[in-house]
Image (cartoon, rainbow, N blue to C red; front, side, top):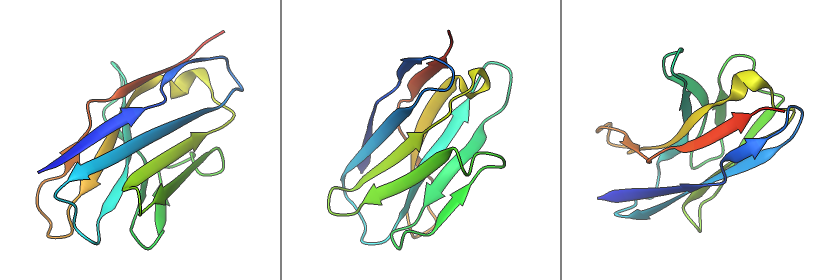
Length: 117
């Protein structure tokens, strides 16, 4: 069983930056994908970014350039650097762990990001 612990959310002014972290523990495979989705009361779940063990990254539309995903395989941790934040980035950000055997993704508890002046 894999557990995910997220951190780094909070309140930031428009144009500011935040860095989210998600640490995985438990039964970790040697190759897996981790990443982030976000959800608001209005929109459905939206892909933010994912990254493989080999550092191949995939971003949601329009987020690349402002958001950067990275990972530390030794720490089983994925990071999301968010720059030039906009009010529309306000959402709950959920970390995901995708096992390499195609089994169901594992989700973190979510961390709230609020972009407001």
